[in-house]
Figure 1 (spheres, rainbow, N blue to C red):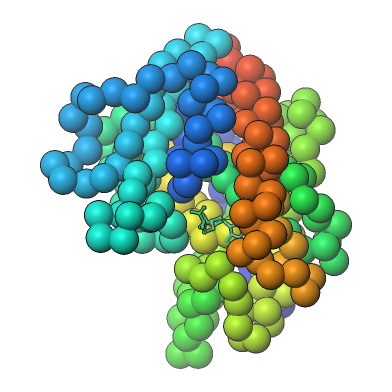
Figure 2 (cartoon, helix red, strand yellow):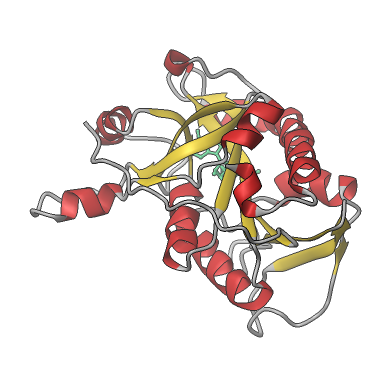
Length: 258
Ligand code: SAH
């Protein structure tokens, strides 16, 4: 069994005016940047030299910022994984002071838990599956289970599926991961979510996570091929759900989501 997730406290009556969207891949961000009509700004909000990118604008009366880690300075690819996501989230919270964070992106789905390609899940809880440590007290720290900010009104308004997200720094998985992913009761698997949840919890910022399924983890298909084949379809499904979520959030207080 997974260790119990830390419970989040009730949301305050704060009006939601600034929303920060943290997105790992450019291909996931692009449909949203276009739909929300955001513009890339050259305002120096990030430390000098980092490749991070920010798109900003207003949508339905909300100040919306999308941040992505850009392109890796050494390897040229999108800097996926927990380290860039944590740093980007930490710095963006400091500078942009969001009332609410939305982390959205692609994920693997477990068909044994009912997941199918292009489904979009609202995450109920996050945990890690690749931080193994058998020293007493450290097993639970490694798994790092965190309950998501409770947003039942949003879930029912958008008729969203919900499930637990398990995070690790690899696109594939080894047999030890499978045992822990199962213990985490995971429906979806990604490479950033639990790290972003850690930072949001550390700095006490409410976080909503929306994850779209590009590939099926518990199937024999090659994950990388399935991921690339479904990336565009799923990125658009994520965009539609996030746009609807922002429309619902517009004009509301944090407590109205609960
Ligand atoms: N070649 C890809 C690399 C993406 S890595 C590219 O187009 O850049 C996979 C990304 O999608 C990560 O950000 C991760 O969070 C998510 N993801 C999708 N399916 C996943 C899976 N089965 N396991 C882990 N992460 C997955």
